[in-house]
Amino acid sequence: MSNDAADPRAAYLTDIIRTFRNYKALGERALAQTPDAALLTELDANSNSIAIVVKHIGGNLRSRFRDFLTTDGEKPDRRRDTEFEMGAPASRADVMQWWGTGWATALSTLESMAPDDVMRTVHVRGEGFLVVEALNRSAAHIAYHVGQIVYLARHFAGPDWRSLSIPKGASAQAGGDFKSRGIAR
Image (cartoon, rainbow, N blue to C red; front, side, top):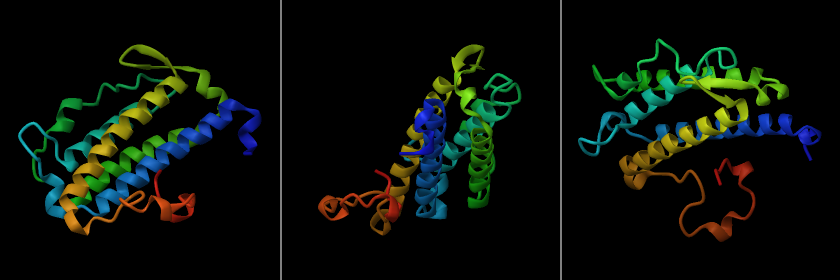
């Protein structure tokens, strides 16, 4: 049992930080398998490329988690619609910078929080949420978009794809040793 077991707020904070770190790692493992040329590829006119999804994640995390406890999560300087536009072609370095900046902002904020903070109220677009609610919403949003990245990365990697979880047909061999092998479950 963890040291946080006596305080559910501390246990929640530990778990949500682990959840965010897991989605960050999952996205990074998928991005690492994506060919550079595929980062900007859209499957059709109504789709987003991996680069666009990363740009959106970065913008969202920077806006939501900058001054998280004291200012509205939708910052006045955020231009959400431009997150879905690609001006000049982006390089892998650009994509990874968007990714890294967003995640650094989110994780530094999460790691600076105290258990008492999870029951405070924060605002997003003027609507009040308990911190626990805002963090759950954010984790779900990030999971949705990381899933898109993984799906596209797998498509573009083709037969070179290395599974990020238990490969098809290998469940019996996987056993319960997920953590030591770096496998998402």
